[in-house]
Length: 128
Length: 138
Image (cartoon, rainbow over all chains, first blue to last red; front, side, top):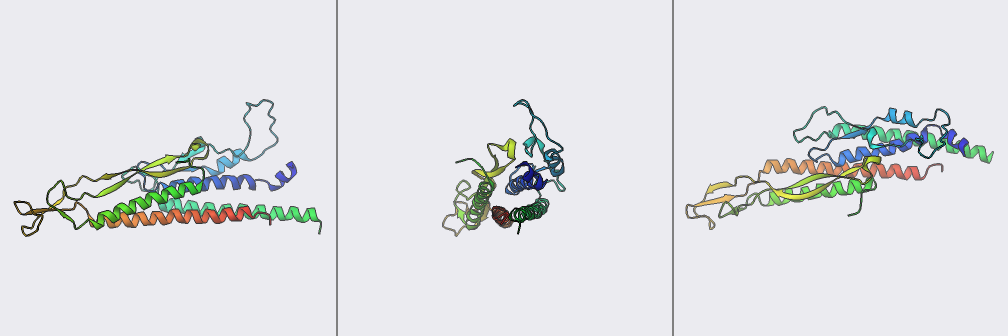
């Protein structure tokens, strides 16, 4: 099983993180009209770097910190608005929509990579 | 109400909040030309009060949406118009028009409908992503 997971490489972690980022950006867009709401986002590269395996990590105690793409809110950061608004809301629809569409395209890219890897595995298993 | 679990909860609440906002705009515009016999009876513009609602697991997933906490009336001065022939005019011949700013309501309407569209767009995009993910490896 570990071999298959290694075969997928970074793309499964990237896909999960992109999906979480999508829901955070959707929350920002949902709160576009809420006074005092502060738009939040995740530092994608830093979070993914933490999720990347750089060798097996032995955990000999249940309280050891485990590796994985565990996205916690303390890793979320507040967006610095280009044009601050009077009501204290830092959601800017132009920014959020661009980030959202970029994130969607990158999600699809990771998905395509995963699809290729799965079909590669399948043809290796079938041996046709 | 049940908790916020996924993107559909986020978008549905945001969309119903924007719909409430559109309803208040419709009420305000409908009453823009109504008159009353006294300052107290004059129509006051109503506004929804938006507030952020966080998911229970917001510390893990960072999901939040918006809810309407209540409807408030904007306390503004009604238009006092001298119309002695109006049936509702007081003894000095004045009627009070609704305290509604039509231009402001139009802007509010445009913004609300745009934000409704934005949320709908987010849902349809994410739904097609989910469908593609479900079909992964086929």
